[in-house]
Length: 354
Ligand SMILES: *Cc1c(COP(=O)(O)O)cnc(C)c1O
Image (cartoon, rainbow, N blue to C red; front, side, top):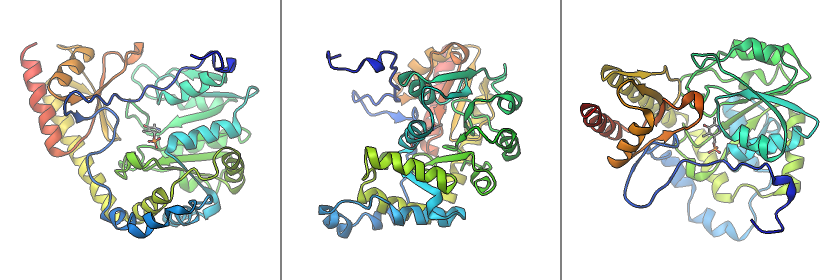
């Protein structure tokens, strides 16, 4: 640390992304990305015309992209905010709405970014324990006066709430904000986007990193009331007006419009997920019911930390979390059929030696 680093960051805890080791080729199942290619329309959209136009700044309003997203979800463009990954969108939410005086809450086991961000900026954040079986007690969130952040489905557990349960939380107290992070919603779940028209205290965040096969593009969006989006844009324009590159806008617009292609990819992922879960259960694993593109698993014969290391030796990267309540579990992203066959092959070998 240099002597210039501002003292307000004393409590800072940076988010640790999934590892990307370069010592060999790995099957990468540790960050819930996908090995499926993006829509062929994305290839067409990122063309030489777009590249030759890059002498000019990108559109700071990202109009084309916001209109396309709005069209797909039945919103107006001014109800949509776009950012450099949903992590940036989340950051703009925190910057816009949460300060020293505000109190927020989220589950103790969830996307770790909420924790790191709260720590970094010294927010009053309450981490509400999930129930013993990792389900969310909706009552906790109905009763609290704090602003709420919920990943739905949750990560890394894969558990989900229904739209009606979320509606109960959102409608209980209209003076608090409810942010629903829908990174995994496309894997067969109910989105809360349609509730935007009824509730002015709701922000729904989605990403192109999971179900749209575009983690490397860095694109996410928020849907909310016009007023909320206006606030977030004010913050964006004081911070980084051109937060999306021209290529991101072009690629994202093409991707969001190709709904048919992504529906097929998602259905394929769900099929592989269910098949893999069944195969792992047959090998004695406890596999949490998943509504996402990952599986959360444990086995009596081998500790998750050991299973993680052994899979890595076999050239397969997964995600192990050391934190107390989930230290017995391993999170495995659902990859392609070939990748998951490799996981099963390696697992069989590992378990046989236990
Ligand atoms: C992956 C993930 C994100 C991050 O998405 P980016 O758009 O890649 O920044 C946000 N929230 C949850 C719950 C995630 O799992």
